Length: 257
Image (cartoon, rainbow, N blue to C red; front, top):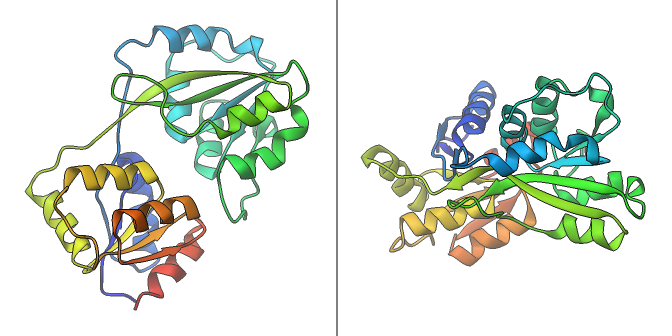
């Protein structure tokens, strides 16, 4: 087992779950959230979208946070759902079921998929999108509440003849750190810990928080090739790609030793 701790960089709620699972697998894991999830200052558009749920053939949620904030906007689910609910991964699927969406109404990549992303989801749901089909993408926004993130899926839906709307359900902010958090980051920068990245935005926030830091000695595991590329571009000396499943992550972490 590696002696170096694993730095989990997901938002706090998800980071706590990942830290718990890694520790249960025998690893030393710590949380250093690089993205802070906050509610919208003005949820009016979100509430309006929530009331228009029957207008859509499918709703796509980019994360568990998107699910939680969307359903927090109010109003009970219809007793009979005709809509499909799209999710990119197991965490989002779990959040949908916790919100009352039956598993039979949820579409997502297989649990053993190599990647949980828009491309994997689209391969699964593309046959649902016929000309005129309406899809609502529920996602996060920047500090001002403007949509943030990739628009690849929206372009694919439009190219297939569908109509795609987007609503922001929450804000993604840069964290503020104290001395303890900076110490953890310093250990990671020096190669004394292994970074675990599941978001390119998290890497950008890290570099923004520590702009003068050299990452040449840093070691990182990324859960997608795009994220790995962002880490390399930021200067990380050693970067490996792993599928996001627990067993694969543990194997990748252990391979550093």
